[in-house]
Length: 543
Image 1: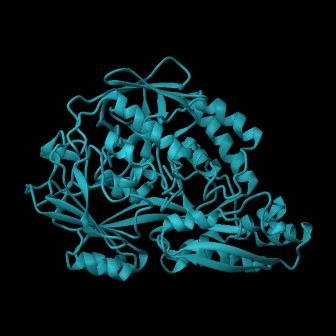
Image 2: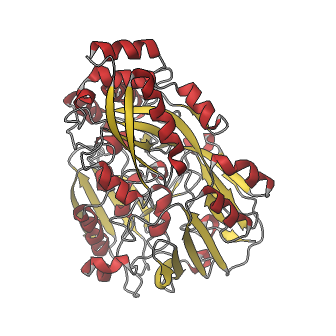
Image 3: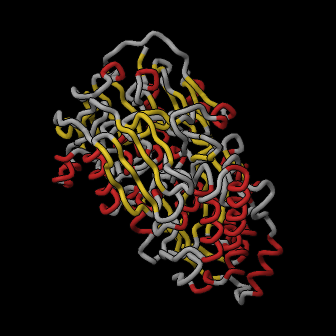
């Protein structure tokens, strides 16, 4: 979906950065980073925006904005990216991805691959952790929660790899095994992936209860009585949290506000202290004295199933290639706001492990028209398009990308989902749309491939991975260092050649932060700051 990245390394192995993932298991605003509790060379190179440190008060309330309601309050069924806030407040992850791009101990205090091949991963758990009802957490509980995630059928399950077993060798050890190599095990167990957010025995016994209550080990507990569906989601302090000094607020509320003007107003009146901004309100936000952070996050794409499309013409590679050549990316970037938008030419994002400078698609209208003629569609055709207005207010980006298609005779009939990302994801897989407009992301090719090749919003037709790509990926996942990067770059070219995920523009994701809010950080590795962290230093606070 969209998020960005930069490679971090641990023991010479690139590990991903899940915060970039986009929303889904998909992108809800979408898909996906990584490492193991230690320093990151990539993180030191990445830009990190940080609020100034100041004396903080322990207590009071915090309110943050999100554009839509949660995909689910059950972490096994929820989303990632910015929408992870709904579950991260109540469910600590095994491993915490800091906004500086480092993986820190949380429910797990240490971790390592067992033997070579990236197929077995061992975690040592923190002692003294309790669930919402005061029950102590053991490896048995973690194994049960992770297994539930695998069978629950949530949108993020495709991103964790083909796990074959999860066992508890001892009371505080967990061992995860994969059928094929997973070089990004650490990144799939942070706060942006549901498998790492551990649910207690009480919640697992009654999964439906997780939609109106929480049973995690996080700093806060979901308070359904003080919440209003689709409007305000309230979280109160967890009295059993293992590190009370990190709980800087009496309660945290997530307020659903989608309209950019309303978001700015909420920030100006202190209704919320953190919010996702928009290009149309950047100048006003700056004038209002708000801190503005901007990191690349959304790479907007035209998703076109390459077989069995509802529009037969789109099954033809030459037609999809024509679409790729028809996008005038430099002009689109200027029209959408050059200050926060740039052309995107390949599935891998700049700075991602697997990106090939100069590769991908360029604008060539003459070639696009010639390909349409060769494919037998010199006058074009009509295609139903699916878009959403939650992370694309007023469908500005979707309309801009599809407008270029008229230059090669392709007319579009757009359906817009405005009720929620979950509804959008479901609609994308109905088979009613020839093109789906959505942003993707990923810090390396493991994340990108897991995102777009897994059945879901990026693979609406649920098609199998082409053998040539599967072979290259298998070799890459078992490799490390420069050899892995070269294989990731090969996959980047292979995926581009399918012209099924056609990149358009890369957009920075602006966040607005109240001057009173401190300890807020973000970076290319994680452009989705979360109010809570494993230590007080990584938790937000108020001056």
